[in-house]
Length: 383
Image (cartoon, rainbow, N blue to C red):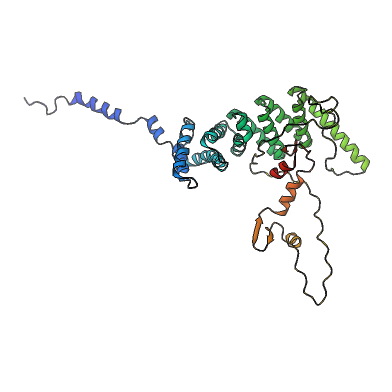
């Protein structure tokens, strides 16, 4: 009787299958090795020819370590990968331009990324996270929490949807950072601002009331929010009465004192009733990009007429038009100081609108913000 050619085949087969399975990487290992987010982050960093290769490798290593576990559970389609990696590099590029190293920049990029995972709108989350690169925040050792950034970003997005000027939303976030507001307090105050605007009150007056009341520290957040509507209604009636006396029916530029009704008691800083309580310098950045929305434009005063010129002699050639006349006849064109020398690309109307948006800003030494106050350098930087 013949013996089988491979008598122990049945015994060897399970051993072969086990060996092949053990040598093949599992799904988790394959996913980790082929993670498209990690691949894209490293590819972009190493492709940045603005840095020497050695620096690119240092940044790539720092990003790899700083984003461990950040990409788990995210969709792997190309659009999602590119969109979320964009958030990382918006922060990284700003940090490199500011001459900051990976130690300062990578945690801020991770904060913006994690805030987006919590549902924060992309542009608002990125813009708010950039506060983490400011000298003020770094010197104070403030670490922005993704949950805070997500809450602030949702608040900014809601304010912009209602047409509230960006600088007001920015001031709420800056105060939340510098004064260490809780998420609950921020959401209450920002919600009160949204409610005031929804009721038709002016956002500048509502925002200034809320911020100043919190700054004074004499009342709780709940008291401030409760007393907001009566205060705004009082201001509205005073304005309506003034318009009635002046015989005007059109809304006028704000000329009343937004501090009215808040000076009955001397401030803790000793400001008393002689003026606004002094504030500390405001060195925070004022940058929160608006997601595709423009600020409401105030009507600027009419531009001054061009300087009068003597009538040209009939036999002489007509004088060439002045820079002002050329600009008026071609709105939106580039402004030239000398032929063929471009100095800027801002349309005239955009420049006028920006300047007009600062009208009514109180003076504050060291300030940089429209709603709470600014000085000359803060105005120059902000505008």
